[in-house]
Structures are given as structure tokens and as C-alpha cells.
Figure 1 (cartoon, rainbow, N blue to C red):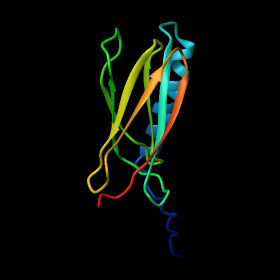
Figure 2 (figure 1 turned 45 degrees about the vertical axis):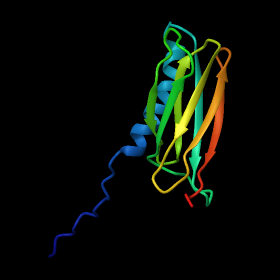
Figure 3 (figure 1 turned 30 degrees about the vertical axis):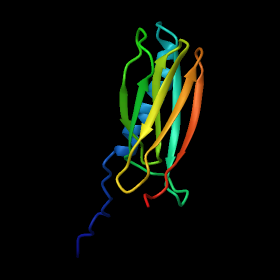
Length: 127
């Protein structure tokens, strides 16, 4: 009698789980812990076809010096999403995205209080 092989399962890298955990912990964990108020700057990066653009470097820079405000950089998730936690104070930030082969995009966003600002970044191919 032949032994049956057990079905093989595809191993996952766990990347999407890591991003999901990081995303959820950044949104919900601070609300449970005492501390300073914060605002959330979130967005999605798209290709010219309308599809999400994963693993793109996003840079957030405060336009003035303020306590707790600092430059931050992050890569987009497999769904093209990113988010930054910033102090909930009136301050203006600049978000820059540059990808080889695409035109760079820069947007400014103004934070007034503990709020969430959602942005969209469609990227066009460089001519």
C-alpha cells in the first residue's frame, strides 16, 4: 500500500500581515494608551493605469520647526497605502513621492487638530 503524500501548502512571507498589524496598531493602540493627541496623514499611490503602486518611498517634511514634528519616510504597502502620525498642532507638511521612471509629485497638507487627512497620488510616467 502506498503512502499518501500530505498536500503541500504555499508558504507566505507574512508581509501583508505585517503591514496590516502595523497599520492597525498605529490607528488603534494610541487611542487606548494615554498620551499626546495626534493627527493622521494617510494616502494611496496609484500608477497611471489606476492600479496601486506598492513599495514606493514617501517622504513627509514639516515646513516649520515644531515640538514633536520631524521628517519621516515610509514605503507604501502592497495596496499602495501609507500613513504618518503627526502631532495634533496647527502645522503644514509637505509630502514628496519620487519613483524612477515617473514624474515626482509633491503636495502640501495643513493639520489643525487631531484629524485624519486622506490624500491620493496618481503618478504619471516621465516623458
